[in-house]
Every structure is written in structure tokens, then in C-alpha cells.
Image 1: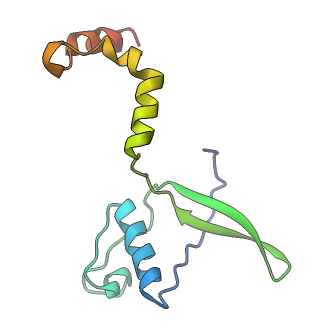
Image 2: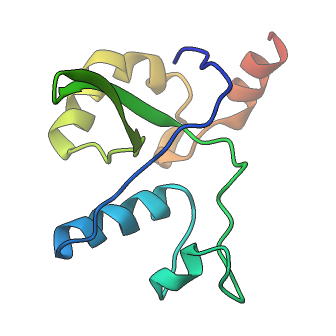
Image 3: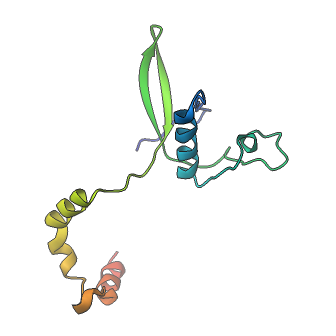
Length: 119
């Protein structure tokens, strides 16, 4: 990630169909927010969801629209790894992990603590 100049950015999500609503609810969930009605996103609602001022991870893509370069912002989402991806990581780093596992699959926390104290 890079530092971002401090000025206001705009995030837009069009709700023309089910896909737009699913993208919006997924983005809100990534921010730790769930809503049962969209009106809660309006600041004039009696019980509004307040997301202004939060520190969040976002991604910016530059795209050309009508001859002008524009920023397109979206909420960064964490993706769950597939089993194949986990196995690939295990093949690559499994040897490093085996030193911290004790018989029966329990993690030997004393090894982890000794590593933490060296920081």
C-alpha cells in the first residue's frame, strides 16, 4: 500500500439490479457493517450507519471515461484461499510450520513465545 494524499474521495455503487445490491452489501460487510434497509446509509435516518471518518483499505484503478482519466475506488476485500492454494502454501512453507507443532496437532506455544520475545 502507498500513502494517499489527504482529500475526500468518492465511492459510488449503482443499485440498478440485484448485482449492484450484492456488491454494496459485500463492500459494507468488508467494512464490518450490515444493514437491513438502505435508508440507514442516509445520514438523515433516525439510526444511520456512520462510515465517514473510518480508516479503511481501498483500491483505486485509473480508467479513461469520455476521454478523461478518472479514479474508480472500491473496497478491498479479503479473499478466502481455495484448498489448492492452501496446499501450495503448505508445500512451500510447511517445513517452517512443522517446528511449532507438537504431537497430536496441538501448537507448541512456547516456541512461538520464544520467537515473539526476540522482536
